[in-house]
Image (cartoon, rainbow over all chains, first blue to last red; front, side, top):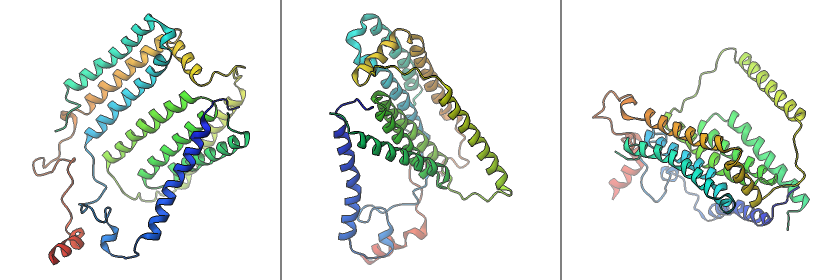
Amino acid sequence: MFVLSGYEYLLGFLLVCSLVPLLALTASKLVRPSRRGPERRTTYESGMEPIGGAWIQFNIRYYMFALIFVIFDVETVFLYPWAVAFNQLGLLAFIEALIFVAILIVGLVYAWRKGALEWS
Amino acid sequence: MNLAEGVQVVSFSLLSLMMLGSALGVVLVSNIVYSAFLLGGVFISMAGLYLLLNADFVATAQVLIYVGAVNVLILFAIMLVNKRQDFAPVPRAWIRRAATGLVCVGLFLLLATMVVVTPWAVSTQVAAGNSAIVAIGKHFFNDFLLPFELASVLLLMALIGAVILARRELIPEQPTAPAQPPALMLPERPRELVSAGASRSAQK
């Protein structure tokens, strides 16, 4: 039994969204010239010339940023119920949440000091 | 205004089909990047199913963490490894396939019996929407306080471990370090790919 309200808008939105790529691809198929050649196979037909393959090895720093992002993403999800129930929880919960954040800030400071947030 | 019963049934079947299709794709597609994107499809369908079960906070967390973060992490890991290769066919692959199938079917049967046997404590009053989030928040700061704070410590451990693992001195150096461009930059363009662009610029 579905009791949440307001989700019919989400459904309509999803339906419209699913039409967007369909319409875009169909429209460009109708409009575009059917010319063949090496230029047509490039990623950006009128843009910069691609250099090399797309399968290059990425720097590990991207992975580092993604990992740090995951950690603070999880923290956000943990803190969200606290923020919603803030009025009913009181001072003790506030202190507990501060402890939660402080433990993670220790990690952020550590990562910062070790230069994990810097390029080059 | 709620969604009509028929709409729910249709959404449920669509989401289930999406989930099963993407899950099969994760296993069967040979390109590992496509597998990773299809895994995102599985996570999104799961979020939709959570939403149909009135668990909007869980659905949000699913999208935020699994689709937004874990899947991105998996993709980055694939890009970091950077191996596109066709694997040679293994002799007597059917033995391995049969063993894998057996293990998977056994696991499925185990989980299915567990789902059927467990006496789920279904509460009569459904806490949905904001009241559910408030209930979760109250549990976090009363009886689940220790796991809540331990989660923070666990995240701290993950963060510090990642920083230590990714530190410069632990990354194996390339043998020709000065000549090699850093992996961040694009490699030198292979000559044979240039022909189209080079001939065009020569005509100018």
